[in-house]
Length: 261
Image (tube, rainbow, N blue to C red; front, side):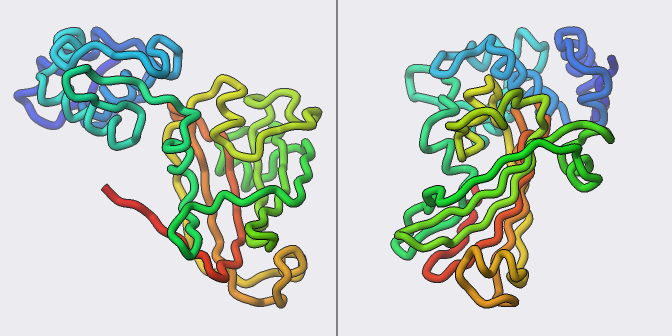
């Protein structure tokens, strides 16, 4: 496949890169070179070539392997470190992060308590069922008509008070047998690990809404009361949508915090 570049002086570098990268046709088209490199390196993690906790080849060796400049490779590695896929350790090298760590799990939870600590919440109630994907689920999870999903309804509590009602959809093909499990994990980072899936990024839309009568009953508030609506899609390391979650939160003494680097 051909890799699209943006500066004439990088054509040779791009040509060398394209000869070294075997991937889905069209996946890297029209993207900056460092992003193409990031995806190629992330795929090595997703495929298990680079294991959690293991050191990866150094920057110079990787640049030589892919036929790119050290600066371009450094930019790709900087991005992966910012995404917490990799950690650089002074004098020791660059290592693949453990996806089950609490630090990585924190990437997918922006709710904080009054003391500033992250609030995960304990499960008070959870229901799961399998169904044909709706039009909206097909769109958000990139499914086809007729594909199946697992729908999960959860209530989370903190200090004995229910504060979050969640509606979750998962592609059934990626989580076979989930509905039959009695101990299904309630956090996507744990569930993905159990099914051999590595997490990449999450995209979350935050808005203000009103509690429906059903949500109001679940949260113990008046119908029409304001709630924070958290609409999130979590993707695998190779870019597949794994989870679509809509959470409706009655903040009380909690707040939403997004960290930017």
